[in-house]
Length: 408
Image 1 (cartoon, rainbow, N blue to C red):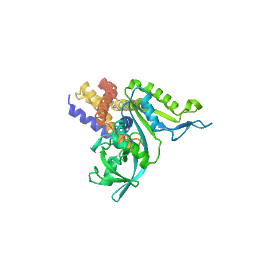
Image 2 (image 1 turned 60 degrees about the vertical axis):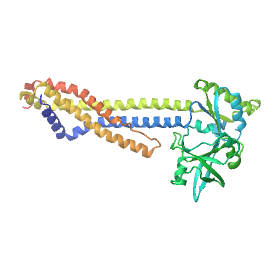
Image 3 (image 1 turned 90 degrees about the vertical axis):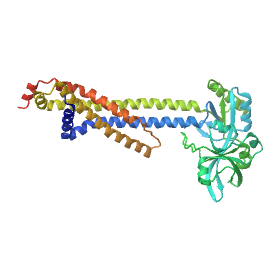
Image 4 (image 1 turned 180 degrees about the vertical axis):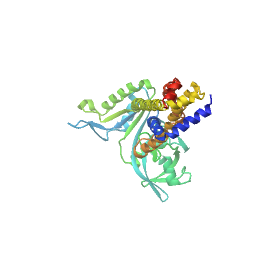
């Protein structure tokens, strides 16, 4: 069997019929582009979920201020209230079993100044436990201490973006900046984290001791939320129930028959539900993409069967000149495989373009896995062989005498 000659004949046949080749390859192209698009969107969703998991430590419940009010004919509306206090955080720590650590928290936007440079940031006031619960990592310096929180020390740990904007190459540790008009000594710089899955910028914030924030910066006596870390995953549900009971008793809500003026949010459960929904979506969309690939393969099958019928004289002549059935099979399998590979190359280009457009015009951040290109070519090779097998078999079984008579 002369493989180079058979391959050359296959390529010549396809280049002579460019439009048919393009149309046959187009079905595979659309399938490959669809698979790439769906996988990249799914991969991007997984990455966002991972970022959300990194945003908090494990087994963390978030108790936040907020009241649910029912409105006739409308969805429930949420409004911020000011009933969450340090006393609540203390009671939770004393009365709820299984709590490992607690970080009460208040945050506000503010302007900060260093030298003649000014920028707007988020100021977080909390206790030293906040750094562990939020999985913050130091790039330099240190975190502030519980004693510094107790004496309302004016110390701060800044995010990477603030370092870049205000200090521009200067080591910030030991320097002083102003939050509003109040000077703070920088004791640490956080390692860069970027944008979280919730869309929050973790690098444009300053973390200061909670007592300093409440008394000297915000001038308030209430909290925005309380981060509660449970010692074990198995205790999460019970802790959730206990926290609600303690909070309702602390706020005397049962006595007056009132609804909760707080919310308990299980970050891990919410992310797991989102992950499950994402996986379901990916399975459905990949099924559609796989179906489109099968449709593309069916298009190759139809084109190759038509090609066999049209080229009966050529098949008969080749057999009469000494070509064996293996040569005929190889030629048609080569054509179907080249059709499939051509469609794959076009489809990869379409896939990159569609991924770019999704990222450009939506809030999604698709990620193309590096190994998808290799898998695409492997799958298209298999696709070409499968859908080209029957036409190749049909061509090889032709009677050369009958085929040559077709010429007349």
